[in-house]
Amino acid sequence: MEETNVKRDVYSIVTDRIISQLEQGVIPWRKPWVDAGIPRNFITMRPYRGMNIWMLASLGYERNYFLSFKQVQDLGASVRKGEKGHMVVFWQKKEQEMEAGATTPKVKYILRYYLVFNIAQCDTIPKEKLPGTVGRACTIEQCELIVDEMPQCPPIKYEKHEAFYNRAEDYVNMPRIETFKSSPEFYSTLYHELVHSTGHPSRLNRSELMESKGKNSEKYAIEELIAEIGACYLKSYVGLSDEYFMYNVAYIKSWLEGLRDNKRFIFYASSAAQRAADFILHIKSENESEQGEEGQTVPNN
Image 1 (cartoon, rainbow, N blue to C red):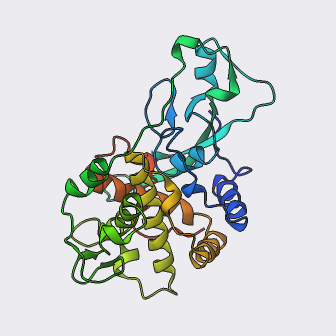
Image 2 (cartoon, rainbow, N blue to C red):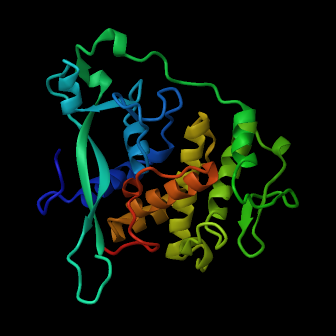
């Protein structure tokens, strides 16, 4: 496993890559991956989580199955000459030395990474192990089920012809579904607002939502990115295409500013979005270290 060190700053590598994509008008977490399936480890079939989902999905492979180099070798297969591995990041939990008078040691999370290869980059994988088509059709019933089964779901009202989450009164307002171009567009918008609602003190108590001072504030930009990515996670869960998000130049500008100012910006937003999606889906993470637990505020460089 290749790991971070002083010569190779993973924060900078990933952030620079995303900045480059955004500058070209490409939003990597909006890249469609419905047909290719949620990125998974080919051997364990375990889905990747957090920012690894969209970092791998945005590569554009026909089938989103990945293996480490050792897993390729264990299959008796090989990586095709000239192919390059793709980064998967994770957080390694390390306990520090016990301080005098303390009852528990301090915990530090260190960013690590390893490389994986898509099955399309490999030769001689046994044919019987290769998966078939992985895409799946999304139904309105599946989309609605996420809303129906969300724990502590806020009231959803249809009083105004605009979509928003009211943090003071804890409700979501939506235009009626028949006013949207399609039902999937309605649910894409609703998921965005429901992710916002997870920041309420009765749920995940996210400071970016509750302490935002308006559209020009840093917390507002971060909260919008959390809702954006969190909605993408929910859409991938039900197999809903990403084509229904509106292209917003102002948001891209604010994200670029955040990425340039703080190389941990995207890591924090992706982790918070994963926690929000897990809350809505009522999923208990098996490995919190994947989510990059760095506290409730954006870490400094």
